[in-house]
Length: 320
Image (cartoon, rainbow, N blue to C red; front, side, top):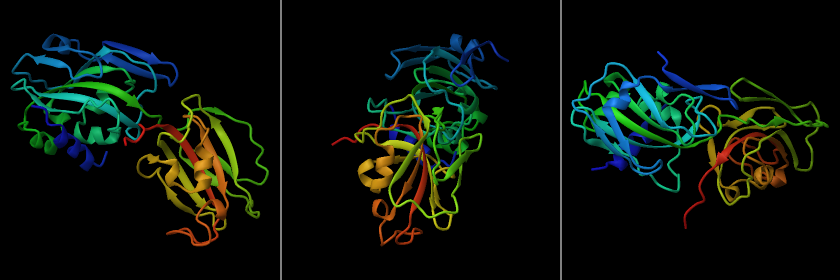
């Protein structure tokens, strides 16, 4: 019996010798496609990628070290950091009995978006087993007991020393940061942006009056899907107050955020609409396009706002 709700609940509560390899040239990420060829001899998998697989395991199945084999190889954005948002589908089998301990929903809408860090908190072995995996990869993972969070193992019926087998479909991978081409911009009194290696921006606001009009600059131009407003946008952002130069909010301390353009202030929505996934956008939002004279929370009334936004992907359209 599949126990999808329990497994997703575990994720929701979480914080965060080479046989063969392939290289994703776009991100210079070397994927180890087979760490232990013996995994293929002990586990049989049938079925199409993206659909619940039929898995048979020679039991009792026990391993002391992590091992994996890629059954299919996809293309696209690789998993490079625990901070990335992903959609994974998985069947996890009890190595002692060969029975399914838990499985995800294999939902065609790809709406079960979690950070890779949450998956790793639940199944630490996935940190190595899915490093540089791409959308379209199906990976068989042999999990020793120390590659499974003990609390998660107990909740899905695994004993303390049990091994497990996971068949993982990498359904979707979001970008970790804006990866587009740098664009020429004329600052013209606007803030300038520097970036840490992980993409986190630093913003330098000039000692000058704030612009009275909405100002939008594309700092990096991605080559992904276009933001139309029909789908929520998954993004990292940092917001500052022009007058005090203080950061009032940022997603870089936690996880990327999903934005419905109808649910954000007009200036923020205008900065995103028409942009492409992989882009980084700087926007200066005057009060009449932000929170007006009333303000909100840490944002005082009449404040001019500065946002730097990395567009990492598009979420599924909301279902009616």
